[in-house]
Image 1 (cartoon, rainbow, N blue to C red):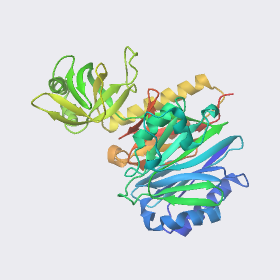
Image 2 (tube, rainbow, N blue to C red):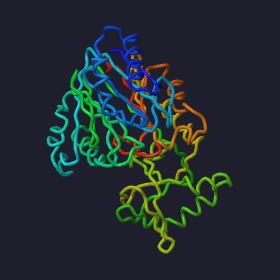
Image 3 (cartoon, rainbow, N blue to C red):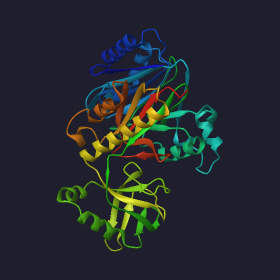
Length: 403
């Protein structure tokens, strides 16, 4: 198995595709191009229909998925709101891949049996696949799909992101179903299932740090928290914020979130054990808090703050934990490539400097090939369940399976 990344910032589509192909052939030689991941800046929006025919003419990639993005990541560089195309290509002699496209009207009911979801991908769970998903945020119910895939493939990793910086009908999804056959979609979702001697390890960095105490939800209704520890939630929130130092109190005015403990059996949850969700609003009369997810009585929550420092620390900790776990589980196997799905709210907007997440990834995993984009929503697991996130960086680390 060998992966390579090519990146072009040329403003002409023809020149960019030529640039990409020359880099790929220089790095892979005459090896077969089995699978590609393509990420294209919205600066090329008017050229989307011409891209795949040009790419198919230059590069005989057998299977490929990709999408448009407001920012593109490749070779350790992050190009936000600038013309760029990144292409991660793999030579996978002992692996298989299956590309699929879905529209919203193809999804089964959420109470359908697992085999209905398996038919969507046409992949047998016995092969132990991993999934990469890219979709249009306006036309596809991504939460329904990832819930169904978790049901049908409970042990499979699912990572990905939603196309960004295009309005309804303006995003693009690109695929080669097989060598020489290409398709541009404007709606729905593209996925690829991978199996054989390849697997994907997920690393999810939500970019927040906990504050205050862990509290238990005593009363709730759908996404409304009506009681915490038998008290009005708003009063406890105000008490927690009031105990912060001045800079954190100021940060809480615009960057305060709810973290939901994902493992109900973990006695002492720490950073990384929470699913981060937005606080949508509060009701001063009842003291209720509206959260961007459905809540259940008995769940434990903790307030979180988000800033550049917290985000950097969270990402560092997530990657350190991953490398430590990999060295124990598979000491003779190293990551060979990575996919990066990062929120549009990260990057220079968060850190005030370029290439921040990319440089941290390389610091911990080395100079492996990787590509990705800035998303309108990121897909990755927390506590063994797949979620659609915001303000998050999700990495899909590609490597050989444990022998």
